[in-house]
Length: 224
Image 1 (spheres, rainbow, N blue to C red):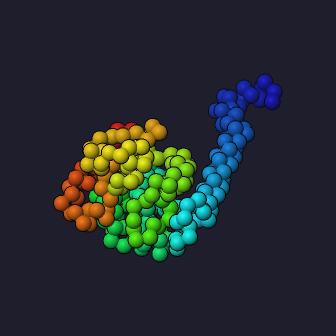
Image 2: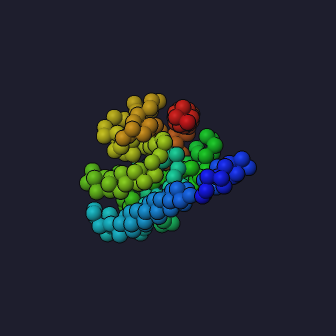
Image 3: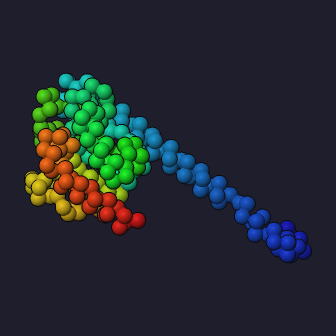
């Protein structure tokens, strides 16, 4: 461009607009698209691994392996111990009465399943008779959860029940003593509360679970 033409464009207020038409925004958009595509590929590979996993004996009896469900860019990550029989039959986490209870808990703090919430388990397969997860099963499945956390990058983790809390916090402390405080998992704030199935059996503790949910919500707001 000649100096005279540049002066004329500048006088008309057009030069800044002309100068913004360069390759940088396009390159940034391409980089974002490539990054999103890589993340989707990572998710697809991870879920395929989970569904075909043979790391522990649970694969011999499972109906469906359940990676999890929800918003893969969620601020809220909810972690429970293992799918129950109803979840295994339908291939979705938290269905039936426990699922209704979890939905009610989420609604109480303005959340909805699938919207800014991702739900998963420590174990991805259902232990028959709803027995407790074994240490070997937890060790076999834990890398899947760690990869999910790395992909989601949640702002807050809410654990439901004893095994989820004790696994992520590497402790054998009871849920009662872990509640009511902010823990950290790899730098991410973590709040412990009761499992929805427990609350169905012990409705007197719903108020304590409500306090846990409020604590988690306050912590997330403090980070924003």
